[in-house]
Length: 294
Ligand code: ASP
Image 1 (cartoon, rainbow, N blue to C red):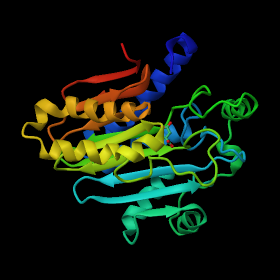
Image 2: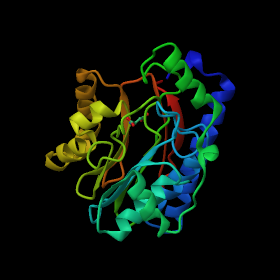
Image 3: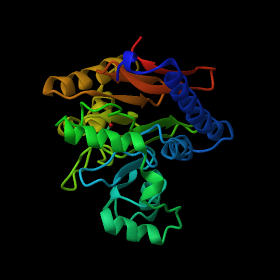
Image 4: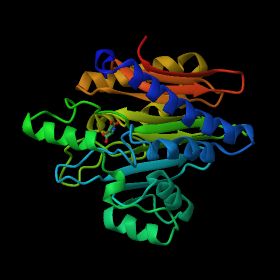
């Protein structure tokens, strides 16, 4: 993500989209709602927004489909739900929620996940809903110019939210179309509990974006939570721990970032890219959205 590649208008559009997602999550909390509900409220509008790589606007697979991944985790109970490779679910984060609520399984894939969704009463959509011209263009350029998924524009745009509610409970959710040109049923980090998504009231809630393969190998989300849980001074060390784990990702060659929230309500970002769409708000009046590092 580079400043030179974004016009001021595009930046303003992304900032407005981030602000409304943030507002939707904050509203749930203001009304005394749960962290899980706030995560879903923040993520679903971004899944509907074609600017982000989740739900509508998801990137294309090599074969030209939009296949989405999502996960949701409850820090209070460590219950979790996740789905991968779904094609007809308008809000994959809500299917992840349904898997979690059902409780029999944690992670469903492809046609099985779609079949499970039939009984969950969720909004469905056809391929035209998810497909957007600029993501199609990214696939075409990736093929024509033999670019890697990380070299086509707009590569990131996975959406996620981490929340601490007024009861002190934490939750994390992530939703994505994955990487442009993915094939062979490739699964990224986003729906893998412990890699791209993790929440535990004892330590933190984390959601990640970036080159998923590296996040899986490092086990980023759980690694951050575990280091925090075992830290003697988690409040002072939270930023350093997140930065250290992201440095490991970078050391292996991976780019991306994380958002996290801690039991005391610290809101932390760490990323090794030039920018990351992000925002944070709390009941003390903090309310900000940002794109680039500075
Ligand atoms: N982490 C996602 C994946 O690897 C992609 C992204 O965050 O842009 O599927």
